[in-house]
Length: 257
Image (cartoon, rainbow, N blue to C red):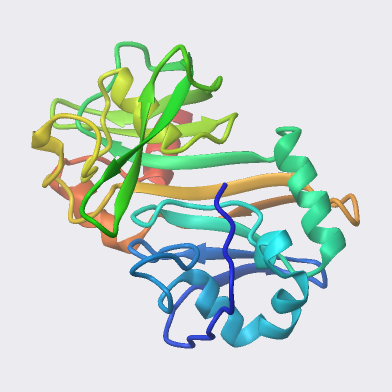
């Protein structure tokens, strides 16, 4: 996990929503196309820049050694929930929960077709590689490889038809692009993915159709069980409608009937 470094400039133009807050932790919802932390080409317009406009004093105290409070990351194109620590104890304890795999993460993905099995567990190791784009920039990508690190993703199909599928995925491990690579492996590439899957999926959605919609964990300081959830993203409803797929709530209601 790359660590942010240097001075973080506050930017109150970066938008995000707070879904949970206490003295030690924040859970925020990141929009799509917002980078999580500063890097080349994105020094001032990231989620962390936005967080510094409201919580800069506390995050600065955590420093680069504790990632300025960032407990984990989301890809730029992925929207959804992220945990941010506001204290050193909160950061250390939450990192421990992630490392012990005691945080359950759930994603909604709109995919170009349903897999053969309506639910299952994908256990395929993932390796990271770097491709250089030009003299100054490079991109990371992931691939299935026995030489990689173990990766496990559980999934279930919420709704499907001849046009596509709505899938809920729960990554047990936290590898680079894990959900995207594993769903592509079983023939269910995420729509709008610029890196994985067949070319026909890349323009099938206005953005990567992947949203981290739920986090479940025991608060490391209070012991309270937290189950933080979001609604289906407004900017992906058009993609669902185009594929004549129901949203997660409607799919769940149909299953319960």
